Structure formats: C-alpha cells, structure tokens
Amino acid sequence: MHLRSARVYAEVAEIDRAHHHEARYWADRERRKAEEIKRTGVHEGPGRTVRV
Image (cartoon, rainbow, N blue to C red; front, side, top):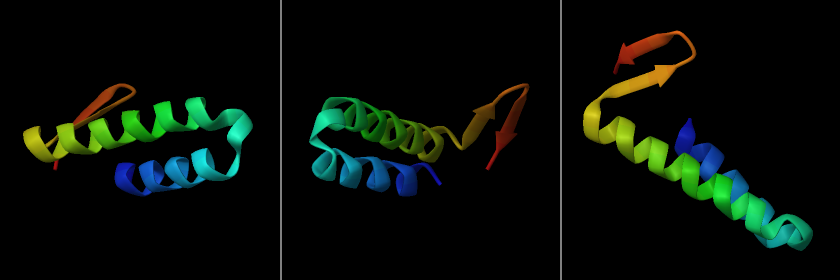
C-alpha cells in the first residue's frame, strides 16, 4: 500500500510542477514507511499496532 502511494506521489511530482516539492516529500515519506514495515514487520496506525 505504501509503495503504491509512493509511486503515485512521484508521478504527481513530475506532472504537477506547482506541487513538485510537496509531492516528492510524500513520496519519500511513503517509501520510508514501507521500508520500516518491511524491516520491522510492524504496521502502526491510529490506535493500533499490527504485526504483518
């Protein structure tokens, strides 16, 4: 899910130049989140922690 979001944000960054930096930030954030989940096996969300 996070990697898919990262790809979408990266595409938006290239298309919508007015929001390039914002979209790149979110792409990087989503990519880091996916890497963290892969590394730890833990997905945290509002009020929950799930081991995947």
